[in-house]
Image 1: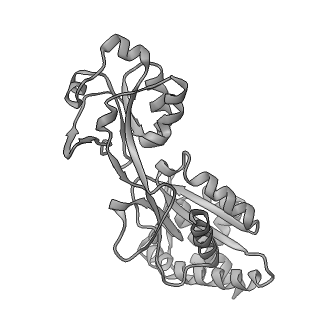
Image 2 (image 1 turned 30 degrees about the horizontal axis):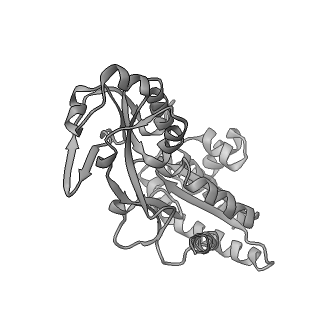
Length: 298
């Protein structure tokens, strides 16, 4: 029975990692051991579970069905074992989070470090993904989203600042060369540096002031994926054009003088991020993380 559970765990790791080598690194096993385990499981079930190509590994229809059915069972088994181990007084287990890159700059990292220092028996895996995938489908315990992306059936807990703000910035050298915009529509005649979500959509440039809102499709001289936001800000500092990003990302550069705030009275505000999760039997590490966040906010 133990071998069966171990083999199923290896199979699920391959499905999640979409490859033998990635799964091997996650599990601390050799690719050969992973391959032998999958072959043994397929032989035992007398069916093919994975389709292998030179680039990736994907589950067959039978493999997809098996993965969906065993994932919650293995999660429950792991949670039960963690609960028993935690009776010794030291919390044990694994916490997996699905988060957008926006919270990985300065919001989530200090919270994770503080939580892990308090619970040294817990391991944490953070999946950074801007596609807003379903956390259950991604096999994660919880996700981080901004208010507009929260599902109705989820429990939501504020994470970090309750309010955030988007900011527009440029280097002094660029503004000296191109002039300072007096109104958001002036941006249509400026060099703009834009970010693109993994989904393919451009990050919108939106402005608001005294009840008036504007959404502009400015010309992008340079476009960078959202996972390269630090590079985008670096290009703005180099004087390539104007960039729009989270104010908390840009504030250190405002303080140093590397960037200058532009159209500050038009910067829009929005609700900060939330940790969200199903309230049904959250695993012990997630319950502890929720308690830690609540204490941190208090």
